[in-house]
Image (tube, rainbow, N blue to C red):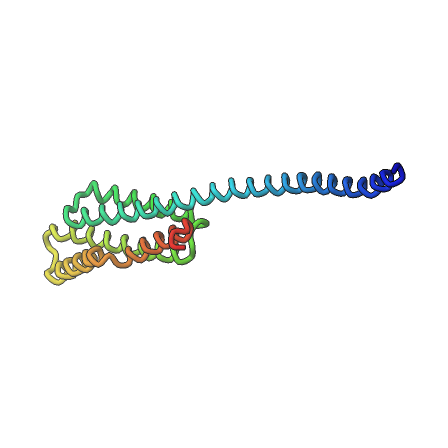
Length: 180
């Protein structure tokens, strides 16, 4: 029996060493992988959160600019015109700084919206400031009024502003995995 026990131990020891070695190896590898996964989760969640905040802020800023420009269209208050210029500068700065988080489609839509909003604001500004001046020819006044209403219609149809809003919302839904 001593002989069979000794043979049994000879067979079992290498197996136990192999199992213990595998367990130790598994713990080491698993801890390294877990640390990398956790680090990735932390960095991704921070970037993800930042991206969502940028999207929300873009939507809010576009809405605020549209609203102020529409108010300026009807009231023509000079102080509001100054606020709008400041808001434009802040919006453009915000968009430029956050470009790495934005898709090419969104950047193109933002540039279009900036151009359209500035064009509308300029038309409203020209109408509001020049239509009350004496010495304006009827043709020039007619041009100012036509541009004024043309720009006002952009707000009524909400184009191209709606394109940007839809792009931002679509990209947020993709990132949030809402439509899946």
